[in-house]
Length: 195
Image (cartoon, rainbow, N blue to C red; front, side):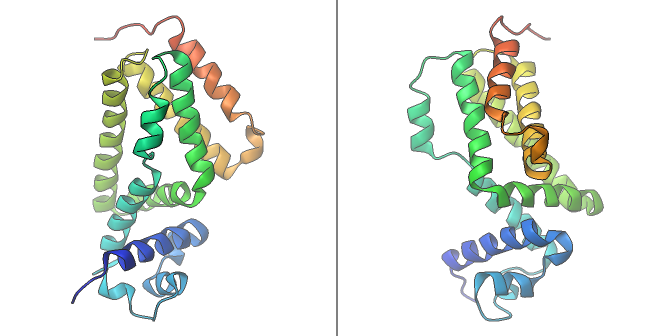
């Protein structure tokens, strides 16, 4: 059967919304069809089974959360500094605010990965690659901070995102200030080198 890439993307976007709103239990092919406004049975023509749907949702969230290359290039015109790193991390947080559903869907996928070892293995591979890509980008751009500092910032900002999504009153809108302080403390005096 021929498949339309635009329709597949629309179905995956609908699946992300369903997963974010209803959780893993609410994610059915019928719910995806309804969310995408397509005839019942359409999703089953694109996704052979639930595992395939979950895998493709993981890929689609990665696409949606990747920074726009032109915006990133513009940001990277600034001199390498702790302030530039803070700006990049604030942009990660801003992407979360603009696409909360993708982040919530990724949290649901993480939970589902605990119960489905094959999905858990895919997530581990994907998220480890994402962290390594971040470290490589940081090093190649000549940004301040070593591998450990980048890992700490990655974990801190993603932890902040979890709280902003689930218990937003904990931070009460101070994410930007906390990111600035994080970078100041980790990077301003130079991160120690690790073996």
